[in-house]
Length: 273
Image (cartoon, rainbow, N blue to C red; front, side):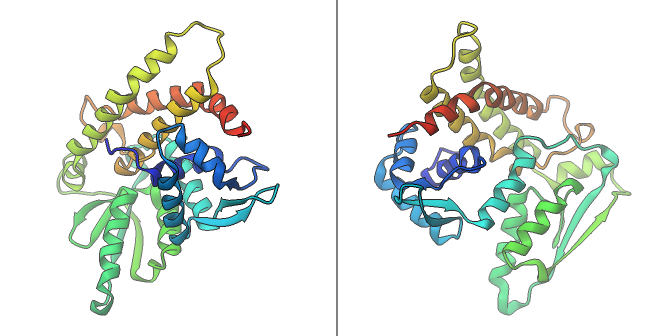
C-alpha cells in the first residue's frame, strides 16, 4: 500500500469533511491543524495546497471571519462526487451488465495526449483488451465520460457498450485484461494495515464515545488508503474472480471503520483552534 502523502491526505480530508452542506472554506490554519493530527508538518501542507491550487483542484476563498482559506473547485467537486460512487456505495456488478470499451486515436503531433489518455484510463480502472482498446465494467461509463470531458480528451475517444462473446471464456479473458494478482496484493496490504485498527475499536467498551481526534486520525488514514483501491480494482463480478478474492473483506473493513469513526472524527474537524 502506498505511503500517505500530504497531497493525498488533503484530498481525503476535503472528500470526507469539506463538502458538508453549509461548510465554509477551510482556513489555512485549520488545514495545518487537521493535517498535523496525521503527522504532516506546516511547510508540507502549504506546499501541497499550492500544488493542488495549480492543478485546479483547490480555489482561494475567504472563510466566514475573513481568513485566507481554500475551497474545492467545481472540477474537484465533480471528481469527488464521482469517487463517492466507487468509495462508498458502488453496487456489485452482475456478469450480464456488460462492458464499456474505450478506443482512441491521437494525432502524432499531440502524442503527449496519448500518454495522458492511457494513464488516465488506467487510473480509472480500465484493463487492456488489445493495443488501443481499453475495457471496464459498464458501471464506470459516467465517471469515464466526466473525466475525459474535464481533461479535454473526449474528442480523441470513442466509447462503446458491449458484451464479450468469445472466443476465450470471459473469466480467462479478464485475467489477461487486468493484473489480478497485483490488485489482490493491494487489498491484502489494506487489510494488513486496517484490520488491526478495526479490531482495536471493536474491542473497546460498548457505549463509550470515541475520542474525536483519535477517530479522525484513524478514519482519515483508512480513507486515504481505501480510496485508491476502487480505482485499481474496477469492481468485476465475483463470478469472474478467483475463489479467495480479498476485495469483499477489504470493502467490509472499510465500511465498518467508516460507520464507526467518520461522524466522531467530524467533531474534531469542527473544533475551534
